[in-house]
Image (tube, rainbow, N blue to C red; front, side, top):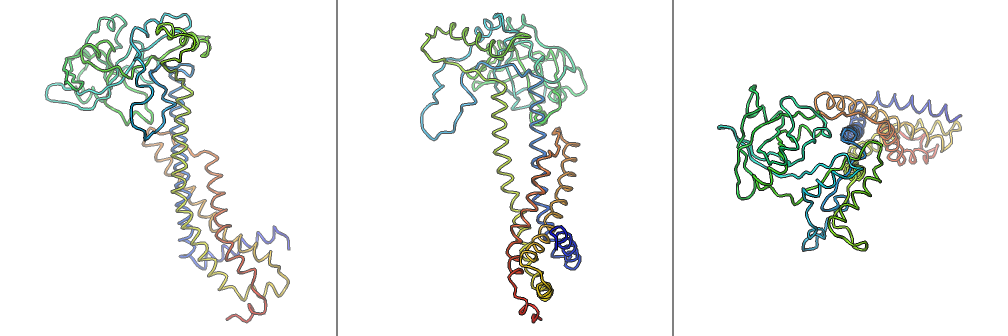
Amino acid sequence: MSRFHTLEEGVGIAFDSIRTNKIRSGLTILGVSIGVGVIVVIAALVSGIRSSVMDGFESAGPDNFGVMRFDFSGVRISIESGRPPWWNRPRVEPEEAVRLARLPLVKEALYNYSFETSMSVDARSVRGVQSSGYSSGWPAYQPGRFVAGRDFTPQEVRQSRPLVVISAPLAKEFFGERDPVGRRIRVTAGSRAVREAFTVVGVFENEENVFSAVVKHWAIFPYSAAMKRLKASNWQASVWIVPQDSVSQLAAMDQVIGAMRSMRGLRPREESDFSILRSAQILDIFNRLTGVFLLVMLALSSVGLLVGGIGVVGIMMISVTERTREIGIRKAVGATRQEILWQFLVEASVLTVLGGAAGLALGGVLSKIVSMYTPIPAAIPLWAILTALLSAAVTGMVFGIVPAYRASRLEPVHALRFE
């Protein structure tokens, strides 16, 4: 008997067994489908988030890079006491950003740092507003648009004018349908609760992405005004460098590094007391984080496959017992052990592949719902489909091997006498 004919026969017998034992088969298929569905949904979410992040980097400029106090890509978790090695490095100061902006290969040098504020208008107040001090010109590298007003100008930054650009949700929270531009917001920041009134000059709406729904209330101040009026700390400040058009990233980086070392009076043999962080490094960090998350979630989702596999063992052992005489007859007319083994392995794999197909359909529906009702462009990658079906088939083969081996080892004489 050819292997193809054996496969065809095994598939037919498997479907007959499923129809005969609907409840047992349904529970087995359900266990496998849950495991596969989780794998597919997780893969779709990770793929969608990564796609959204990649689009953000493309919008901001893939050749841009940052000058920072320390290297984020080199951060390691440590149980050792004491301050981190970068603690004694000098802060990145605004004057350094101004001088970097004058370099021939640099198009823009945007000084920025983050802090937190509380804001209030009349009786309304919002705590935990994610705030940033920035140079003017930041909107060119932020996916989104002004729905009202404008950015602050370089002159307003130099004059430390009390101006602020707020997010669209924050503007709606404070002003409803009224025009926010020109209105004043009381801002509180710092441990000393420094309070100052700032005038709204613009309302910015971020392009919808996976992170836009997480942080709705944010504000951007001229970095000089935040430092002078709110006493905001620039201890983690950085300079975002935009190279000139047609200038390579490496050439711009070399010029920036040379200028920073010169400004800080570093000798040729001395190590740099600042770090350069490229967009590719940030993306690499993100890929590593999502990779670990994906592995952990896949390990957890394998519990569903394990449950399905245990079901395969149970249903196949019952199937072997119920069909003992049939096995004896087949062996008596010439069927080999390998053919019996193959038949039962095919039957087990059909059960789990059906579960895999159901899991794919479930995962596809859930991914579609996520992409429709959230900013995540969830889409099932091809590798997830292949992995899901392969894992389902392998589950059937692995967990079906014991019942199949038992069936293949039955002696024809004893099998024919079985009642």
